[in-house]
Amino acid sequence: MAYLPQMTTRCTLVSGIAVVAAALAFLAAAAIPRALAADDAGATGLRKDVVFTDYTPLSANSELIRRMLSPLAAAQIPAAEARTGLRLSEQPVDLARETFMLYVPQHAPEKGYGLLVFIAPWDGASLPADWVPVLDQFGLILVEPVESGNDQSLFGRRFPLAILAEYNVAKRYRLDPDRIYVSGFSGGSRVALRLAVAYPDIFRGAILNAGSDPIGDQVAPLPPADLFHRFQEFGHLVYVTGDRDIKNASFDHASMRSLDSWCVFNVDSYAELSVAHDVMPPGVLTRALGLLSAPVQRDPEKLAACRNAHETELSGQLADVEALLARGARDDARRKLIDIDAQFGGLAAPRSVALFDRLGGK
Image (cartoon, rainbow, N blue to C red; front, side, top):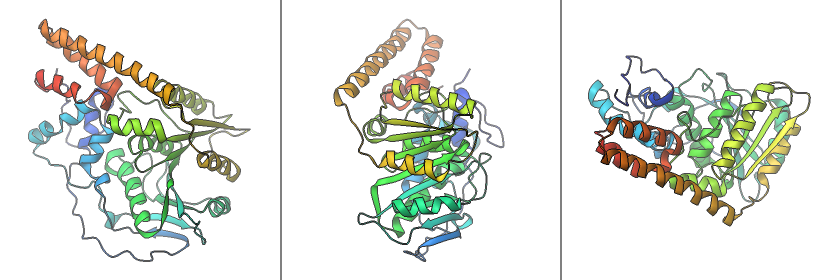
């Protein structure tokens, strides 16, 4: 059985090994308009239906594939293009058709504004009125895509819209790079976690409000080693979930255990008392931002030991694939390699991809 599943005409997103289909969900090329001059740069207050115009290579389809898909899934995109006759567009979204909500405090801090990119689980964007004093207190801009709810494509909309939101705000306002965060509620929080892990060169931290997942599996593969090592060293996550939101509190525990097992130690959590599944109130937002503002605590020896343990395990598993290939057990080698790809993701490349090529790339 080929590793790449047969693609449907609608390129629907599927689970498990077929996660490669996620990259094909945005193959239809979009006409990218020529970027216009930035308007209203420096304006403050709340604005709805803001249109941005500038693109970044970090939101390109090729970069999303590199960071968000496992190496073996990404390696099959060219074959899928050849089979279907479709081609990846340079960018997955047409910004001329997108709008964002933007709130900018009146007074910028000395080192520049902070930024919170917020991802909602629903389409539409709204700013809780009681968040405004908190944003003003921290000198924090908030930007939110208008159509980035749970029903929208991860690769086709939710990931790139968040990246483009950060990029366009950074072009129009002076930002403090140490205070650029991503957050979301419920399903949007799960998207925020994926972005924090894969884009640590943009986001220095994340507030995960009532939604999280483990990392390092088929659904949330680890990014390339250089990016993941940066996340391990500098990323900072704050989990915020109501004590009556039993299901998501359980998900948070599983997610935090996963992070700890992958040598991510800069993690805080806060349980909202007498709260079910709801957006965090201003006091909790204040607490979460205070935690993110604190210096990241590092233990280089602990991190090095944890990384070495994973590298030893990975090398042993790749050696097992080599041994299976040497015995001619190609099917067993393929299954083992797929398991390695799901567990280690970008940490296994390029060794995993080289073995995949020896198996014929399927």
